[in-house]
Length: 485
Image 1 (cartoon, rainbow, N blue to C red):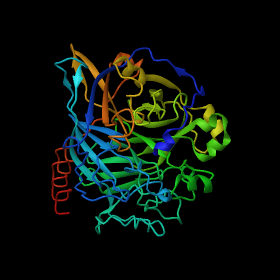
Image 2: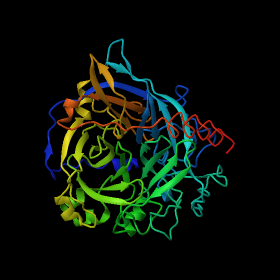
Image 3: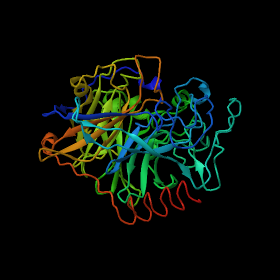
Image 4: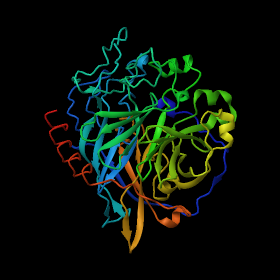
């Protein structure tokens, strides 16, 4: 997402009844990730050159766009389309040939033996995996833009890298063309076998599946055709001008969840579609959610979610096989030179919800899912000494993490991360690092719901198996990033 989009005014609506939360979730810990070497802001991609806008190709940042829990103290974190907050070329919305990537981060949650929060975490970057396709992709030529081709020089026969540059698409196809090299990752979820991960994107909107070992795309998932735009363009202005239906430019598939049983994915748009927005009224605040059967790749259902407090949704994560947590927020706070107002997590239940597939926005808004406030991030952080201008503007990544024990009682953990737009240091009230906030809750805080953790296997396809992180096809094996192929 561009910073300009996030600086829109707060939408204050009452489109759907919202039940107040009964109990308050607690802040357990907070951690900051700068780089493997303090102050250098470098990832582990090994890309030692500068991008079109002068930023380093290995710049660490933005990795709170999406996070996923693996096991133990290991998480995956995905940056979005790259460092595009630097003004250099309006014709491509300031985007550059930043190769999309996923980071592996270690975050050991330990009791705090000193003063402050009850737990501490010290995030450590462990690996950076570049995302590619084994088949050829479409890149922009850069003709007339004075920036050259959008095709990365690192490409090989079987590794065609995805990048964030906005002109890397086929203008003769709709925005759902899977040959497009442009990718704007916004959420990430791990498969139950531990072999792969799924990423949702704003450009298509796309949902892709990649091998965890080497970042190669192995599958694509189609979404309903009315979510694509017929005429993709290299800028938000162009796409908005020439299209009347489909996802709004730069506001595509923002959130992605996988159910604990590993059978179903739920993707949610950041904002309403162009056609729903044009209808006005409640339809202009309707966000569409698609439910996809992973085995068949088929879209099973589409449900509606209505914004009530924020200006958009940034993520969704599964509480169990039918209930989900939705991250609704504004764009205010640290990194925006303003004060945070809305960063709220709502609980929704899709059991018995009305399918809106093929339904117009006005009627779909009438049957949107009910939502219950689970966590007011701003309130909890302020209660723990944070001021509104210290709370990150772009609270985007969410995940459930490992349980902890306190006096024999099980405490579940809910992790939240920020997308800092690669702006660790900026001309504002302070620095804007990649931050992780850990909240604790008990079963009593769920008001009758049950938390079911995702079961990630440790067998043949698990973390330590043949196809896992340390196996033959793992990141250090023959076919991994450091291997022969």
